[in-house]
Image 1: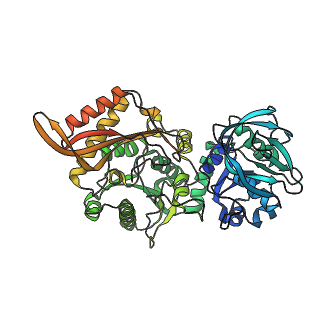
Image 2: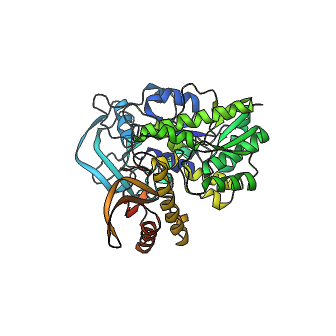
Image 3: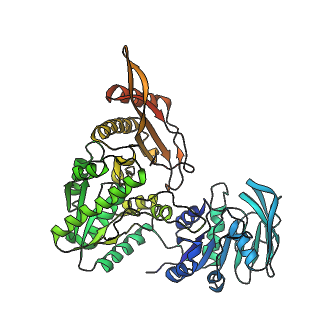
Length: 512
C-alpha cells in the first residue's frame, strides 16, 4: 500500500529533520532529501506536496542551492519555510535582500488572510524567527497572508497554484501552533490522508522483506539493542527459520553483555541466534589505531568479513540485515553545500566495497523513537524497547585513543557502575543515552598518602527524542557524587571523574 506522502527538500537547515518528525507525528508519511536531488526524489516518492526547508545561505548569492525546475514543473503544492520562502519568491520574479536587522527568536504573527494554510488558528500567534534576509517585493500572483513587526511578508501565497511561503519555523517547539500549520498544508492543501502508523509500517515492512528476500536466507547483525532486536523480530516474523542471527562479540561489548543478549534474544524471544567470538581479530586490527574514523572503518570492515564467513558456513546466505536508522542516513550523506558529513556511521559508512551480501535495512526510514513504537507494536517488552542505544563500534569509540584490553576493562567497570547508579536512582528511563568515556589523558591525584597519576573518566547523559539533537541531562549532584566515588574507589587505574555538559549540536552524543 502506497501512503500519501510529502517530500521535504533540505537546504541545510538545522531544523530540517524536525519537519519530518512533526509530519510523521501527524500520521503523514514523508521523506527528507537533499535539495540537489529533487527530480529523483519526486520520481521515487511520488508525493502529494513539497516542503522547502530553511538554510544558512542567501538565495541571491553565487553558489547558493536552488530547488530546480522539477519542483515548479511538478504541479504540486509547495510550502517554503524561511530560506524556502525566499527561494520561492526569487524563482517567480520577486526580490530578496539582506534585512537591516537579523530577526531571531519569538515574534507575534498577525494574519491577514487565514485561508487553507492557517485555517482554525487565531488571528495572532507566537512564532519562531531565524533569518537575516527578507523578501522585498512579492512575485506576481502572490499576496501577503501574515506579517510580524519586522517582516511585512512573514507569510505569502499564490492561492491559485497552492504555493505558500512562511518566514518563520513551524517545526520547532517555539512555534506552539506550528504543527497545525504543517497539518493544514499536508492534509488540507495537499489532501494527504493521515494514515501512516507503526502498525501499518510493521505490516508493510514484513511484506517488503518477503518481496526482497524471496526464498533466500538472511544473516543478521544482532547486538541486542532495540534497533537490532526489532530488526530480528521483523525478520523472524517475515521469513522464520531462514533468518540466522549472529551476535559478534568483537571484544568491545559492555560488562557481561554477550551472555545477557544471548539469554534475552535466543532463550526468551526464540531468535535463531549464534554467538561468534571474534574479539582477538578485532583487537589485533585496532592495535595502535587512535583516529576515530579509522577505528570505525576497521570495525565496520571486519564486522562484514566475519558475517561473510558465517554466511559461507550456511552455504546459501545472500542477504545481510542491518539496523540503519534515518538519522544515520541523514548524517552520513554529504549534501552539496547545505550539510557536511559529520562522521561515518557503522551502519552506513563502514561497509566493504566488495561485499558479497545484499543489505536488508527495514528501519532505514525511521527515527529512534519510531523504532521504539514499532517494538511495542511487535509485542516487545518495555525493558527491551527502552534499552539505551549502544553504537555498533562498541566501546572502541568511547575509548579515546588506542583500544587495549586494559583500557577496555577499566571502561567496562566504570560504565557498569554509572548505569547501575542511574537505575538505582530511577533515572534510566528519563535519559535518552548515558555512558562513560575513557579519556586519553592522565591526571594527578592523591589516594591515601600516595601520589597517583591515573586515568580520567567522563560521564555523559543526554535527553533527546530523535537523537539528531540532544541536551545534556542535569543529573542530581548526589547521583553524580555516588557514581564518581564508586568509580574512583572500585575501578583500579582511575582517579578523576568529570561530567560532560555539552549539547548536540555543536557536539555529538558520542565522543568519537
